[in-house]
Length: 78
Image 1: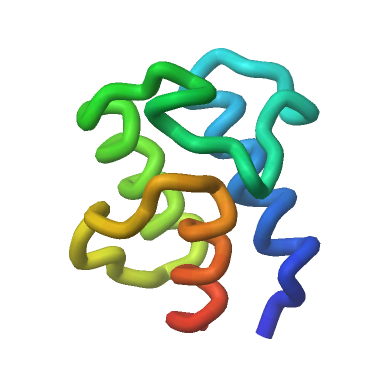
Image 2 (image 1 turned 90 degrees about the vertical axis):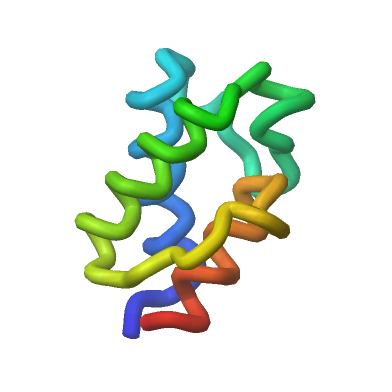
C-alpha cells in the first residue's frame, strides 16, 4: 500500500494538471470549489484520472470537497 505522502503527490500532480495549476498550489486543505473554482466537470475529470491511476472506484463525489478528502478516500480503497 502506498503511503499518504506518495498518494498525495500523485493526486496533487493530477489536480494541478487538470486545473492548470502549479503542484505547490495544491495543498491537502485546498477546497476544489472555493480555492480552485472547480466545477463539477473539473471534479469529474480529476476523479476519472485518479480512478485510472490508483485502480479504485470513487462512487460519489459527495463528501469530497478538499484534496485531503480525496487522498483519504483513495487510501481507504487501496
